[in-house]
Length: 167
Image (cartoon, rainbow, N blue to C red; front, side, top):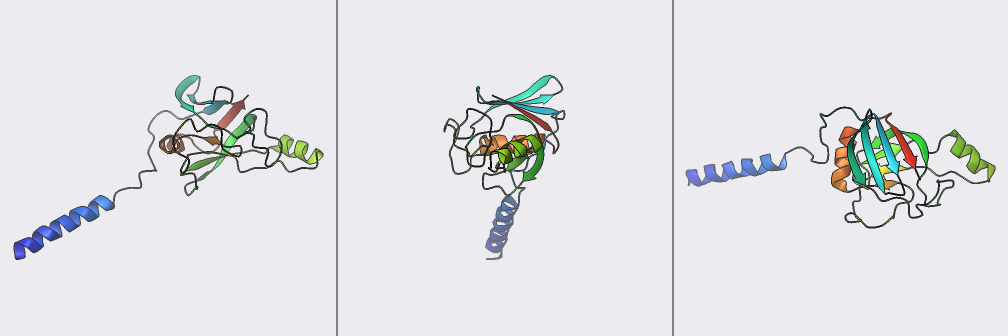
């Protein structure tokens, strides 16, 4: 009887140890620093650079109205221009997300000149709840990758990294 209790205790400890592992959505990145991100909306691609060297390329989904620069709240467009990664959200409803500094002063001024709001809350994020790739353009202006890819990107990219979004 005592041997059975020891065996049961062993398997209980082994099971608890397996459950106590690290949260797998947070990865480590040991490569060269990412110095800029470039998004080509027409090609639905995002590239990570270290200096002039492309370190990684990702296929992306964009705002549901992918053509043109985001100008107003609710227009469904992904911004175009030079921005920065300005925050991160480890508790995003889209798995993980990195904030893009849209709107800038020019974006705000233009929207206000038209009597509208520029919108905001533009992120690079995962696709939790929306399946895998090739779902088409479905975001409200964000840049979406798979959940596995945002885990990698979240580890690679530091706050303050420039992001250039081209048509």
